[in-house]
Length: 105
Length: 309
Image (tube, rainbow over all chains, first blue to last red; front, side, top):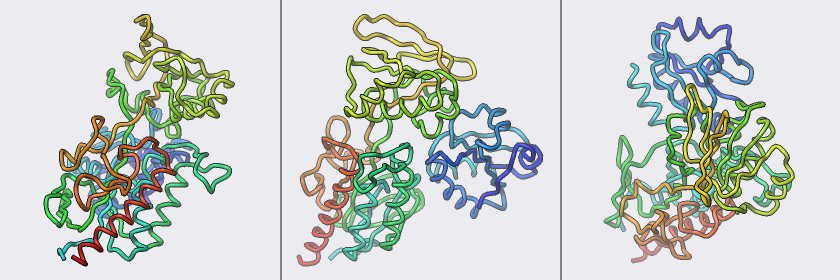
């Protein structure tokens, strides 16, 4: 299971992370978010040593989604050295996410 | 008898592909189901499905898709998350090119469905910044805000009603002066006082700094154009078939949907089609499921004939 983080730990887990981070913004009421979950977990198995995988429930954690102007989910943001390196909005396939990961590592 | 990796490969794991998988697996075929994104198909963005028999109180699209997926898995079919990049259908053995390998089969079922059609008025740069095709995903971000919904079919009307649970006002912009949606949905929409209908009109542009701040609405009868201030724009103006990867390998109609006979047979022997990607008069979960069953049985018969010849 991809690790859940919250608004309080966002800075520590994402911004200050030494490894690049893939943040999956999701909510329990969003079908495509639930559908993309297994794809993210799959990628975590393959790339987990190179990239940190975390997820943020936008229902419970309003601050970080608002900071990154998220108005659609699933949104996946890739962070490198504390800044946004890439952003993917909506339901996408594994191939597309893998491309973004490969560009980062 | 040609040698191949699989008897049947199905492309697309929506209701049509999953049903084809269930029937093919029960026919003891060696089946592979390919899905480039997530199983379930277009219904996973649908908030509520009320017209699929067996669920008298309705069911969420995601839950129905998940049940179909589990049903197919229980029959023992193999599912792979891969995108098909091209096909070679010229020989007895069909070749399917994925990003990292080529696989072969005796019979192919295309169930790639369709995707929401775009307006093409500059909405791409507002994707995730006010423009959406999925109310169940994004409506909660528009709590107490004003949004535009575009379209007049079942999806547009049902999702516009769903939007009113969050938005304080929904403009429903439709290019004709009456809705195409089924009557029960129309009745609900007309009774909903948060929905304002904008008839004979299209969205002709949108603007904003951080996200959508206003959309231009053009009356198609008077050509009059006006801008209205909104926070979001939800687009449901129909679908476009997921067939570009096929190039000219099977016969398509003018709109790009695959032409087939009553056995779901396409212009290429051994290649069958099911669901929304087919040239069909109705695109529903119930019709996709029927197509999937027929396509699987047709594929089975095709393979049996190969064996006996």
